[in-house]
Amino acid sequence: MDGTFTISRGSRTEAQVVTVLLESDGVNGWGECVPYARYGESLNSVCEQISSLSLAFAEGSMNRQALQQALPAGAARNALDCALWDLEAKRQGKSAWQLAGLEEPASVITAFTLSLDTPEKMRDSAQKNAARPVLKIKLGGQGDLQRLEAVREGAPQSQLIVDANEGWSAIDYDALAPVMLKLGVSLVEQPLAAGDDIALAGRERPLAVCADESCHDRESLAGLVGKYDVVNIKLDKTGGLTEALALKQAAEAQGFRIMVGCMVGSSLAMAPALLVAQGVEFVDLDGPLLLAEDRTTPMLFEGSQLYPASAKLWG
Image (cartoon, rainbow, N blue to C red):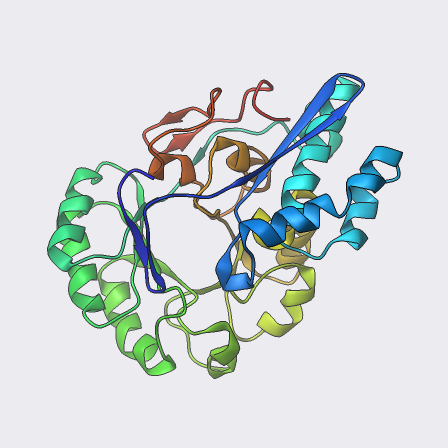
């Protein structure tokens, strides 16, 4: 990674990803996932899940539909699902968006994430990125108000999104929400721990609250009604593009606003996510911008403007 990345749960200096390659008749399909310890995943566990389907793939009995039942939602299924989309697109000579029945994707504006740090360092980071339209601020501990004020001072014009990563209580939200609104914050992600978010039920929410750790796939939606205003769709949580597109449609039908996010991964992980990000209110696909190096054929960023992937990369 390009420096140390810190959230309320800890810090890291590298991004560990799993890359999947599916080959059929000389055609290659690629996918990437990021195992996440918060969900009980590791590099080994995800690789074991992927390897468990080797025979089914070798026999030709595994496709995207069968995969939804063969593995649970999560990183392993994401890498395989996206590789299958890529493989199918290349074999048919079409783009993945055409296979999905979508409109041709356009570029999107992504948020840029500021790591949790001291107010002074976060102010400096905000100043360096003050030209970016949207900044996402990692919070989740004592001194959050000072951090937020420092970021606003450093980037007076940027739209702000706050991500507490389950680091607050309901009382913290009640106290901080009015201040955040005055500072121009548009959204707060997962202020409460997923297991404690019942405290949000029926609560007045002057600042929109987004479900991240509480939202995985369509089965999650029933438990979010009355607690959240927005859902964050990440392919590593949904288990791939197939479920992500279905979750987006179902969430919109139930009146949720949509954010499309990512783990810290390469352009190969952002490429399918960009298809889901079309037309949504909040986009957070800055993973490659946080890395020291990206894929050989990376997606194009012009500042915070992210363009669709080349077919050489995916889809």
